[in-house]
Image: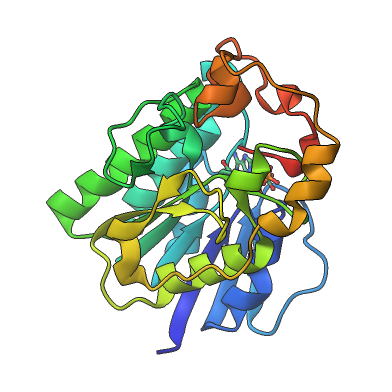
Length: 280
Ligand SMILES: NC(=O)c1ccc[n+]([C@@H]2O[C@H](COP(=O)([O-])OP(=O)(O)OC[C@H]3O[C@@H](n4cnc5c(N)ncnc54)[C@H](O)[C@@H]3O)[C@@H](O)[C@H]2O)c1
């Protein structure tokens, strides 16, 4: 089924820019939105709207007539609560509330492993595990997942929450040998979250078909997400470049990695061994 109108937030970002062309191909009209002045060349059917997620009046008109919103706009790192409040908390509320008022059927949301980052990696966690945020950033993902759950229960507005682990090009560090989500698998994941006819409220981990993936997507199998890439292809080369690790370090033992040990309000990405393999 081709959709009439989709809205993609965070379209100028590293993940949003991967999604523009595949989403444009799934609908008659794609509205890509972000804070930048210009997004460059448009795909067929794509239009750019500059809007601040924290401003309801800027979001509401953009969602008129939209079937779904793919919500990837946010600050993707730990910051003081006051900095995250507008983009990550109020921004999510604005998407769901304006979406509901405009008749949007579903939101596909870029959640994060940091919603459950304090769980131990040795616990092979499923999508039904309790929230256990590692930062204010992770808390904003818990808030938005609960927002989606509430709008489903009270207003029958669907949502799929993609708990992304580490989306990047090639695998960059030892942690990502388990947590990597390739860009092609990101596109497979978002495509399934959009084209599955009925989803209700759903949570799925955004991870590739890694031999060492530390999470279990069994309960989300109805989405038909079958990742094709495997970080094992990079493992030997990465491990050869990696210093020995302190196995008692919570940053090694917890799903949140460095975010599990960083001080609240301070950047977790700054503690990553290789920042281009970002794990937010
Ligand atoms: N990259 C990863 O590995 C990863 C992992 C887990 C979750 N995520 C989530 O995926 C989403 C995209 O992440 P990314 O890596 O592409 O980050 P990014 O920073 O590259 O992109 C985010 C975009 O959101 C926009 N944005 C921020 N505040 C805004 C506001 N107030 N109004 C409108 N737009 C605003 C930014 O301008 C930016 O273009 C985020 O929600 C992030 O939390 C990413």
